[in-house]
Amino acid sequence: MPTAPLTLGVEEEYQIIDPATRELTSYVQEMMGLGRVVLGSQLKQEFMQSQIEVGSHICRNVKEARQELIRLRRTVTQVAEEHGRKIAAASTHPFSRWQDQNLSEGARYDDLANEMKDAARRLLIFGMHVHLGFGKTPEAFELMIDILNQLRYFLPHILALTTSSPFWHGRDTGLKSYRSLVFENMPRSGIPPHFSGYAEYEHYITLMGKVGSLGRHADTLKPTGGASEIGDPTKIWWDARPHPDLGTLEVRICDMCTQVDDAVAIAALIQALVAKLIQLRNQNQSWRIYRGIFIEENKWRAVRYGLEGKLIDFGIAAEVPMRFLAQEILALVDDVVDDLNSRAEIAHVHTILERGTSADRQLQVYLHALHEGATAREALHAVVDHLIAETSAGWTRH
Image (cartoon, rainbow, N blue to C red):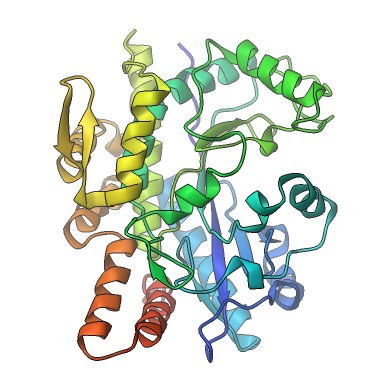
Protein backbone atom coordinates (compact mmCIF):
# COMPACT_ATOMS: atom_id res chain seq x y z
CA MET A 1 0.00 0.00 0.00
CA PRO A 2 1.26 3.54 -0.76
CA THR A 3 2.60 5.75 1.97
CA ALA A 4 3.72 9.37 2.01
CA PRO A 5 6.79 11.25 3.19
CA LEU A 6 4.58 13.60 5.28
CA THR A 7 7.10 16.38 5.15
CA LEU A 8 5.84 19.59 6.72
CA GLY A 9 5.45 23.14 5.49
CA VAL A 10 3.80 25.90 7.52
CA GLU A 11 2.54 29.29 6.35
CA GLU A 12 1.66 32.05 8.80
CA GLU A 13 0.01 35.43 8.17
CA TYR A 14 0.91 38.22 10.59
CA GLN A 15 -0.65 41.57 11.45
CA ILE A 16 1.50 44.69 11.00
CA ILE A 17 0.79 46.97 13.97
CA ASP A 18 1.47 50.64 14.65
CA PRO A 19 2.62 50.49 18.29
CA ALA A 20 1.40 54.03 19.04
CA THR A 21 -2.19 53.59 17.88
CA ARG A 22 -2.33 49.78 18.07
CA GLU A 23 -4.07 49.94 14.69
CA LEU A 24 -3.18 47.82 11.71
CA THR A 25 -0.90 49.76 9.39
CA SER A 26 -0.45 49.42 5.63
CA TYR A 27 3.29 48.96 5.74
CA VAL A 28 4.03 45.73 3.91
CA GLN A 29 5.77 47.36 0.93
CA GLU A 30 8.30 49.08 3.20
CA MET A 31 8.97 45.80 5.00
CA MET A 32 9.29 43.69 1.86
CA GLY A 33 12.54 45.33 0.73
CA LEU A 34 14.66 44.46 3.74
CA GLY A 35 12.62 41.34 4.48
CA ARG A 36 13.23 39.88 1.03
CA VAL A 37 16.97 40.44 1.41
CA VAL A 38 16.90 38.27 4.54
CA LEU A 39 14.15 35.75 3.76
CA GLY A 40 13.88 35.76 -0.03
CA SER A 41 10.78 34.04 -1.38
CA GLN A 42 9.82 32.89 2.12
CA LEU A 43 8.33 36.35 2.68
CA LYS A 44 5.20 37.39 0.76
CA GLN A 45 2.75 40.22 0.77
CA GLU A 46 -0.91 39.37 1.14
CA PHE A 47 -4.22 40.81 -0.06
CA MET A 48 -4.13 43.65 2.48
CA GLN A 49 -1.05 45.85 2.90
CA SER A 50 -1.37 45.44 6.68
CA GLN A 51 -0.66 41.71 6.32
CA ILE A 52 2.60 39.88 5.77
CA GLU A 53 2.99 36.15 5.13
CA VAL A 54 5.86 33.76 5.75
CA GLY A 55 6.30 30.22 4.52
CA SER A 56 8.70 27.68 5.94
CA HIS A 57 11.10 25.58 3.95
CA ILE A 58 10.12 21.95 3.49
CA CYS A 59 10.71 20.35 6.89
CA ARG A 60 11.47 16.67 7.36
CA ASN A 61 9.87 16.62 10.81
CA VAL A 62 8.16 18.84 13.34
CA LYS A 63 11.40 19.73 15.11
CA GLU A 64 12.67 21.33 11.91
CA ALA A 65 9.29 23.07 11.58
CA ARG A 66 9.73 24.55 15.06
CA GLN A 67 13.16 25.92 14.14
CA GLU A 68 11.76 27.40 10.93
CA LEU A 69 8.81 29.12 12.62
CA ILE A 70 11.04 30.57 15.34
CA ARG A 71 13.48 31.87 12.73
CA LEU A 72 10.71 33.36 10.60
CA ARG A 73 8.89 35.02 13.49
CA ARG A 74 12.13 36.43 14.87
CA THR A 75 13.21 37.79 11.50
CA VAL A 76 9.87 39.38 10.60
CA THR A 77 9.63 40.93 14.06
CA GLN A 78 13.12 42.41 13.69
CA VAL A 79 12.31 43.78 10.23
CA ALA A 80 9.10 45.32 11.56
CA GLU A 81 10.86 46.90 14.53
CA GLU A 82 13.49 48.45 12.26
CA HIS A 83 10.56 50.24 10.61
CA GLY A 84 8.96 51.21 13.91
CA ARG A 85 6.25 48.56 13.65
CA LYS A 86 5.21 45.47 15.60
CA ILE A 87 3.99 42.00 14.57
CA ALA A 88 1.00 40.20 16.07
CA ALA A 89 -0.27 36.68 15.39
CA ALA A 90 -4.06 36.39 15.63
CA SER A 91 -6.80 35.76 13.09
CA THR A 92 -8.56 39.12 13.51
CA HIS A 93 -7.45 42.48 14.83
CA PRO A 94 -9.44 43.56 17.88
CA PHE A 95 -10.69 46.83 16.38
CA SER A 96 -9.17 47.82 13.00
CA ARG A 97 -11.73 47.94 10.19
CA TRP A 98 -11.44 46.37 6.76
CA GLN A 99 -12.81 49.55 5.12
CA ASP A 100 -9.69 51.42 6.28
CA GLN A 101 -7.14 49.03 4.77
CA ASN A 102 -5.17 49.51 1.56
CA LEU A 103 -5.17 46.60 -0.84
CA SER A 104 -1.95 45.21 -2.25
CA GLU A 105 -1.08 45.81 -5.89
CA GLY A 106 -0.83 42.98 -8.39
CA ALA A 107 -2.90 41.24 -11.03
CA ARG A 108 -4.01 38.43 -8.71
CA TYR A 109 -5.20 40.84 -6.03
CA ASP A 110 -6.89 43.09 -8.59
CA ASP A 111 -8.72 40.11 -10.06
CA LEU A 112 -9.79 38.96 -6.62
CA ALA A 113 -11.17 42.38 -5.66
CA ASN A 114 -12.90 42.90 -9.01
CA GLU A 115 -14.50 39.46 -9.04
CA MET A 116 -15.42 39.04 -5.37
CA LYS A 117 -16.09 42.71 -4.48
CA ASP A 118 -16.80 43.17 -0.76
CA ALA A 119 -16.67 39.43 -0.11
CA ALA A 120 -12.92 39.76 -0.76
CA ARG A 121 -12.41 43.32 0.47
CA ARG A 122 -13.56 42.41 3.97
CA LEU A 123 -11.00 39.58 4.26
CA LEU A 124 -9.11 41.30 7.06
CA ILE A 125 -8.30 37.91 8.52
CA PHE A 126 -5.14 35.92 9.15
CA GLY A 127 -4.60 32.17 9.10
CA MET A 128 -2.10 29.35 9.43
CA HIS A 129 -1.82 26.72 6.71
CA VAL A 130 -0.12 23.37 7.23
CA HIS A 131 1.14 21.40 4.20
CA LEU A 132 1.72 17.63 4.37
CA GLY A 133 3.95 16.22 1.65
CA PHE A 134 2.52 13.34 -0.39
CA GLY A 135 4.39 13.57 -3.71
CA LYS A 136 3.25 13.98 -7.30
CA THR A 137 2.84 10.41 -8.53
CA PRO A 138 -0.58 9.01 -9.50
CA GLU A 139 -0.48 6.84 -6.36
CA ALA A 140 0.32 9.85 -4.20
CA PHE A 141 -2.61 11.85 -5.60
CA GLU A 142 -5.02 8.96 -5.00
CA LEU A 143 -3.77 8.56 -1.44
CA MET A 144 -4.11 12.29 -0.88
CA ILE A 145 -7.79 12.29 -1.85
CA ASP A 146 -8.51 9.22 0.28
CA ILE A 147 -6.90 10.84 3.34
CA LEU A 148 -8.63 14.17 2.67
CA ASN A 149 -12.00 12.41 2.67
CA GLN A 150 -11.33 11.02 6.13
CA LEU A 151 -9.53 14.05 7.58
CA ARG A 152 -12.63 16.19 6.94
CA TYR A 153 -14.15 14.77 10.14
CA PHE A 154 -11.34 16.18 12.30
CA LEU A 155 -11.24 19.70 10.84
CA PRO A 156 -13.68 21.24 13.38
CA HIS A 157 -11.64 19.75 16.23
CA ILE A 158 -8.48 21.33 14.82
CA LEU A 159 -10.23 24.69 14.54
CA ALA A 160 -11.43 24.50 18.15
CA LEU A 161 -7.81 24.06 19.28
CA THR A 162 -6.61 27.15 17.39
CA THR A 163 -9.30 29.83 17.80
CA SER A 164 -7.87 33.35 17.98
CA SER A 165 -10.49 35.71 16.52
CA PRO A 166 -13.10 36.67 19.14
CA PHE A 167 -13.14 40.39 18.21
CA TRP A 168 -14.25 42.19 15.06
CA HIS A 169 -14.36 45.95 14.52
CA GLY A 170 -14.07 46.67 18.24
CA ARG A 171 -16.75 44.24 19.35
CA ASP A 172 -16.70 41.03 21.33
CA THR A 173 -18.52 38.93 18.76
CA GLY A 174 -19.45 36.13 21.16
CA LEU A 175 -17.63 33.75 18.80
CA LYS A 176 -14.21 32.19 19.23
CA SER A 177 -13.37 32.17 15.49
CA TYR A 178 -15.01 35.10 13.74
CA ARG A 179 -12.43 34.64 10.98
CA SER A 180 -14.26 31.49 9.92
CA LEU A 181 -17.48 33.39 9.31
CA VAL A 182 -15.75 36.11 7.33
CA PHE A 183 -13.95 33.60 5.12
CA GLU A 184 -17.08 31.61 4.34
CA ASN A 185 -18.45 34.58 2.42
CA MET A 186 -16.07 33.45 -0.30
CA PRO A 187 -17.12 30.86 -2.88
CA ARG A 188 -15.58 27.38 -2.78
CA SER A 189 -14.85 27.67 0.93
CA GLY A 190 -15.75 25.67 4.04
CA ILE A 191 -15.55 21.92 4.59
CA PRO A 192 -14.35 20.22 1.37
CA PRO A 193 -16.65 17.78 -0.42
CA HIS A 194 -16.09 14.05 -0.61
CA PHE A 195 -14.46 12.77 -3.81
CA SER A 196 -14.51 9.20 -5.09
CA GLY A 197 -10.92 9.58 -6.29
CA TYR A 198 -8.43 11.98 -7.83
CA ALA A 199 -10.12 11.72 -11.23
CA GLU A 200 -13.34 13.18 -9.81
CA TYR A 201 -11.41 15.98 -8.12
CA GLU A 202 -9.50 16.75 -11.32
CA HIS A 203 -12.76 16.75 -13.28
CA TYR A 204 -14.14 19.34 -10.88
CA ILE A 205 -11.06 21.55 -11.27
CA THR A 206 -11.12 21.22 -15.05
CA LEU A 207 -14.82 22.06 -15.28
CA MET A 208 -14.55 25.06 -12.97
CA GLY A 209 -11.58 26.29 -14.99
CA LYS A 210 -13.42 25.80 -18.26
CA VAL A 211 -16.39 27.88 -17.14
CA GLY A 212 -14.15 30.67 -15.81
CA SER A 213 -14.56 30.16 -12.07
CA LEU A 214 -10.89 29.32 -11.47
CA GLY A 215 -9.08 30.80 -14.43
CA ARG A 216 -6.49 28.63 -16.12
CA HIS A 217 -3.21 27.36 -14.78
CA ALA A 218 -1.07 25.75 -17.46
CA ASP A 219 1.64 24.29 -15.23
CA THR A 220 -0.68 22.38 -12.89
CA LEU A 221 0.44 18.77 -12.78
CA LYS A 222 -1.89 15.96 -13.63
CA PRO A 223 -1.44 12.51 -12.03
CA THR A 224 0.45 11.44 -15.14
CA GLY A 225 3.07 14.09 -14.41
CA GLY A 226 2.20 16.09 -17.53
CA ALA A 227 1.01 19.68 -17.75
CA SER A 228 -2.51 20.59 -18.68
CA GLU A 229 -4.61 23.75 -18.85
CA ILE A 230 -6.97 22.99 -16.05
CA GLY A 231 -8.32 25.36 -13.45
CA ASP A 232 -6.08 26.93 -10.82
CA PRO A 233 -6.57 24.87 -7.62
CA THR A 234 -5.38 27.79 -5.46
CA LYS A 235 -8.65 29.57 -6.25
CA ILE A 236 -10.38 26.94 -4.15
CA TRP A 237 -10.41 28.01 -0.51
CA TRP A 238 -11.70 24.91 1.26
CA ASP A 239 -10.66 24.24 4.85
CA ALA A 240 -8.38 21.55 3.46
CA ARG A 241 -7.44 21.06 -0.17
CA PRO A 242 -5.02 19.19 -2.44
CA HIS A 243 -2.20 21.33 -3.77
CA PRO A 244 -1.17 19.43 -6.91
CA ASP A 245 1.67 21.80 -7.84
CA LEU A 246 3.39 21.14 -4.53
CA GLY A 247 2.29 17.55 -4.07
CA THR A 248 0.84 18.43 -0.68
CA LEU A 249 -2.38 18.22 1.26
CA GLU A 250 -2.96 21.70 2.67
CA VAL A 251 -4.95 22.11 5.91
CA ARG A 252 -6.30 25.66 6.01
CA ILE A 253 -8.96 25.64 8.73
CA CYS A 254 -6.67 26.85 11.53
CA ASP A 255 -6.89 30.27 13.09
CA MET A 256 -3.48 31.86 13.62
CA CYS A 257 -1.82 30.53 16.76
CA THR A 258 -0.52 33.47 18.77
CA GLN A 259 2.20 31.47 20.55
CA VAL A 260 4.69 29.55 18.45
CA ASP A 261 4.46 26.51 20.77
CA ASP A 262 0.75 26.25 19.94
CA ALA A 263 1.44 26.48 16.21
CA VAL A 264 4.05 23.72 16.39
CA ALA A 265 1.73 21.49 18.43
CA ILE A 266 -1.10 21.88 15.92
CA ALA A 267 1.18 21.17 12.97
CA ALA A 268 2.40 18.04 14.77
CA LEU A 269 -1.16 16.95 15.53
CA ILE A 270 -2.26 17.36 11.91
CA GLN A 271 0.76 15.38 10.73
CA ALA A 272 0.02 12.64 13.27
CA LEU A 273 -3.64 12.45 12.24
CA VAL A 274 -2.66 12.02 8.59
CA ALA A 275 -0.07 9.40 9.52
CA LYS A 276 -2.70 7.53 11.56
CA LEU A 277 -5.18 7.55 8.68
CA ILE A 278 -2.49 6.20 6.35
CA GLN A 279 -1.68 3.51 8.91
CA LEU A 280 -5.34 2.49 9.02
CA ARG A 281 -5.44 2.36 5.23
CA ASN A 282 -2.39 0.11 5.19
CA GLN A 283 -4.30 -2.19 7.56
CA ASN A 284 -7.30 -2.22 5.20
CA GLN A 285 -9.24 0.00 7.59
CA SER A 286 -10.69 3.49 7.27
CA TRP A 287 -12.17 6.25 9.39
CA ARG A 288 -15.89 6.50 8.75
CA ILE A 289 -16.82 9.04 6.07
CA TYR A 290 -19.46 11.52 7.24
CA ARG A 291 -21.60 13.79 5.10
CA GLY A 292 -20.65 17.43 4.99
CA ILE A 293 -23.83 18.58 6.72
CA PHE A 294 -22.74 16.73 9.87
CA ILE A 295 -19.20 18.07 9.80
CA GLU A 296 -20.49 21.60 9.20
CA GLU A 297 -22.55 21.33 12.39
CA ASN A 298 -19.42 20.55 14.36
CA LYS A 299 -17.56 23.39 12.65
CA TRP A 300 -20.23 25.85 13.76
CA ARG A 301 -19.86 24.65 17.34
CA ALA A 302 -16.08 25.10 17.12
CA VAL A 303 -16.56 28.60 15.69
CA ARG A 304 -19.00 29.57 18.42
CA TYR A 305 -17.58 27.95 21.53
CA GLY A 306 -14.05 26.72 20.77
CA LEU A 307 -12.74 24.51 23.57
CA GLU A 308 -15.60 25.51 25.86
CA GLY A 309 -18.24 23.82 23.75
CA LYS A 310 -19.46 20.37 22.87
CA LEU A 311 -19.01 18.76 19.49
CA ILE A 312 -21.08 15.87 18.24
CA ASP A 313 -19.76 12.33 18.26
CA PHE A 314 -21.83 11.04 15.37
CA GLY A 315 -20.85 7.44 16.07
CA ILE A 316 -22.80 7.51 19.33
CA ALA A 317 -25.18 10.32 18.29
CA ALA A 318 -24.33 12.45 21.31
CA GLU A 319 -22.65 15.75 22.05
CA VAL A 320 -19.37 15.48 23.93
CA PRO A 321 -17.19 18.20 25.51
CA MET A 322 -14.52 19.31 23.06
CA ARG A 323 -11.79 18.87 25.66
CA PHE A 324 -12.74 15.20 26.05
CA LEU A 325 -12.78 14.71 22.27
CA ALA A 326 -9.30 16.26 22.08
CA GLN A 327 -8.06 13.68 24.59
CA GLU A 328 -9.57 10.94 22.41
CA ILE A 329 -7.73 12.29 19.36
CA LEU A 330 -4.46 12.31 21.28
CA ALA A 331 -5.07 8.69 22.24
CA LEU A 332 -5.91 7.85 18.62
CA VAL A 333 -2.57 9.10 17.30
CA ASP A 334 -0.45 7.89 20.21
CA ASP A 335 1.02 4.92 18.37
CA VAL A 336 2.38 7.01 15.47
CA VAL A 337 3.94 9.99 17.26
CA ASP A 338 7.16 8.21 18.21
CA ASP A 339 7.81 7.25 14.59
CA LEU A 340 7.25 10.91 13.71
CA ASN A 341 9.48 12.02 16.61
CA SER A 342 6.80 14.48 17.70
CA ARG A 343 5.68 13.24 21.12
CA ALA A 344 7.03 16.28 22.97
CA GLU A 345 5.43 18.72 20.53
CA ILE A 346 2.03 17.00 20.59
CA ALA A 347 2.14 16.87 24.39
CA HIS A 348 1.75 20.66 24.30
CA VAL A 349 -1.88 20.11 23.23
CA HIS A 350 -2.53 19.30 26.90
CA THR A 351 -1.30 22.81 27.74
CA ILE A 352 -3.71 24.30 25.19
CA LEU A 353 -6.54 22.35 26.78
CA GLU A 354 -5.59 23.55 30.25
CA ARG A 355 -5.09 27.29 29.62
CA GLY A 356 -7.30 27.75 26.56
CA THR A 357 -6.62 29.09 23.09
CA SER A 358 -5.56 32.59 22.10
CA ALA A 359 -9.22 33.58 21.84
CA ASP A 360 -9.78 32.55 25.46
CA ARG A 361 -6.75 34.53 26.64
CA GLN A 362 -7.69 37.62 24.63
CA LEU A 363 -11.11 37.64 26.24
CA GLN A 364 -9.55 37.24 29.68
CA VAL A 365 -7.26 40.24 29.06
CA TYR A 366 -10.19 42.31 27.78
CA LEU A 367 -12.51 41.51 30.69
CA HIS A 368 -9.76 41.99 33.25
CA ALA A 369 -8.99 45.45 31.84
CA LEU A 370 -12.66 46.41 31.99
CA HIS A 371 -12.86 45.13 35.56
CA GLU A 372 -9.89 47.34 36.44
CA GLY A 373 -11.73 50.40 35.16
CA ALA A 374 -10.47 50.65 31.58
CA THR A 375 -12.72 51.96 28.84
CA ALA A 376 -13.69 49.54 26.07
CA ARG A 377 -11.09 51.15 23.77
CA GLU A 378 -8.38 50.91 26.42
CA ALA A 379 -9.28 47.26 27.02
CA LEU A 380 -8.92 46.55 23.29
CA HIS A 381 -5.53 48.27 23.33
CA ALA A 382 -4.55 45.93 26.16
CA VAL A 383 -5.53 42.98 23.96
CA VAL A 384 -3.27 44.22 21.14
CA ASP A 385 -0.36 44.65 23.57
CA HIS A 386 -1.02 41.14 24.84
CA LEU A 387 -0.97 39.72 21.29
CA ILE A 388 2.30 41.48 20.43
CA ALA A 389 3.94 40.09 23.58
CA GLU A 390 2.64 36.54 23.09
CA THR A 391 3.64 36.44 19.43
CA SER A 392 7.30 36.56 20.42
CA ALA A 393 6.92 34.68 23.71
CA GLY A 394 8.05 31.34 22.33
CA TRP A 395 11.25 32.32 20.56
CA THR A 396 12.94 34.93 22.70
CA ARG A 397 14.26 32.12 24.88
CA HIS A 398 15.86 30.31 21.93
